Image (cartoon, rainbow, N blue to C red; front, side, top):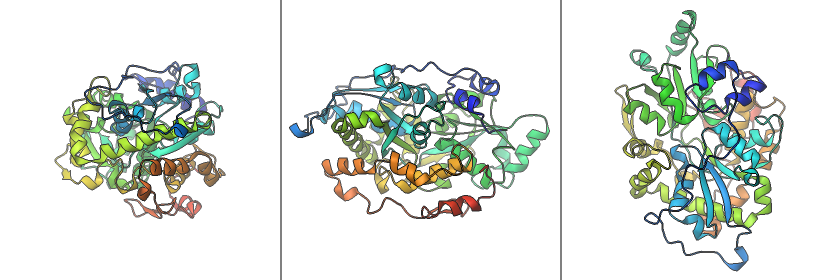
Length: 448
């Protein structure tokens, strides 16, 4: 059974080692809420761009300090590049620290603490998390208001499965998936599908894929929580049948011949929203000019990361030991849209690759946040009567994105609408942000 009790929910979201699976099963302890500062907090001189401050006296930030968390995932690149290229300093934020977090549970805990108490002010984060934290759903009822300032990327995740399923050719649409998992379960073994945080993006991609293939994620499998950097080790150890995570961990799994990718998430929902740049609401309200400066730096970094001619350098920077500790070659391929699934299939399609700026990837569409909340209602992470639109209006600060875009000369990049319109998934299901209740009502497999 994969439905989390409140106690188990809070505990498992913070696990960070190979033993996470065993602890998850018995409700073991979480992490100590303390910022992990293993990553550099100084910009690399060799990598820095011009750092001549571009800040008028009227826009001088209230503080030059901010502590931002990140997980070792390629979609954290804009924060890392903003640091390494001196972009935070360029906009007056010369004392920004970009701090590695062990897991999404650690990120949550450190956001709740805040930098004044040894935590962080904001982070590269799974888009649903600021909503779950704001409403106290993953913090023992402690509501810590958050703002989403930008989307960091679209696409770029994958669902990978164990080598034992290669002969069955399980992929995006698989008639054999339900039967295969049922056979394992009838033999007395648990079917374990790993995600990175309950109610987070990877959890929702996994659940959507399973349900679309007739597998009930609440009853037919056991959904477990494993931090992104621990996915490959757990798959190699035989601790799960499938996992959903961002890159570079799917590519790394294949490089080590320890599994294969059934699908990349751009196939599940093309140009789907993924991570967000989010800050504590009280920090933004206290430091609005500093928040704008951080956002300007992040947007500029996203534009830099998007350029094809910068991909190789980006992968070398983020792959360094102080950031991901992953060979750049294992990051680069999927960044370019060159995917080796590990089962004989390959594609070369840049349009399905991770996007940082192209096709409005950075804009925090409220329609996308509405889908995330609706899906979290589907699986019981939010109450069925949640006023999703009201919650989105409270957390999503697209107004700040627009201000920052104008300030860096990107007014033309501002979409005409806060909605991207009707979205279509791989199984033909459509989500109309004008009528999310109809979408939810028509889903066959759900908890709500």
